[in-house]
Image (cartoon, rainbow, N blue to C red; front, side, top):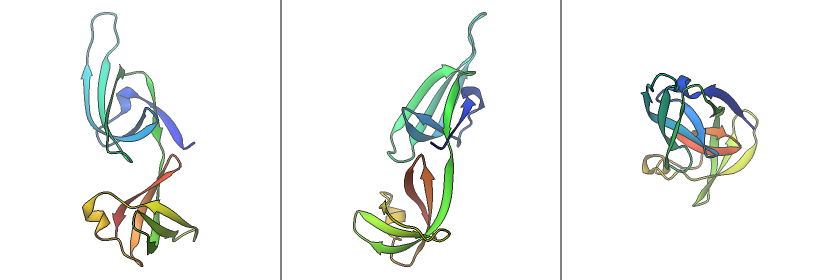
Length: 131
């Protein structure tokens, strides 16, 4: 599994965290100081990379959380199969099917021969940019 660990206090807006087994991008963090003997707590709001769902965690700032390791790759589209796209990795020449992006600005640019940047996160792949 491609995961690292960090503390809740080290997370920043724009960084990535795993919440409920789903890799997410942090969009908001609020930290609350507590009383004399309590530890400071942080409320982290994040959006799922694959699902687009909003997820939150409330935890002490010194608690360990999982951070997904994102591998960025470049591939070329071989075929548009409707719901999926066939891509060949330009380094390893491996071919595989990947889910077509739901975002209209990406989906409209997909055509055979186009180069794409895709991310491999926790064994799942997603197209993030069409060049």
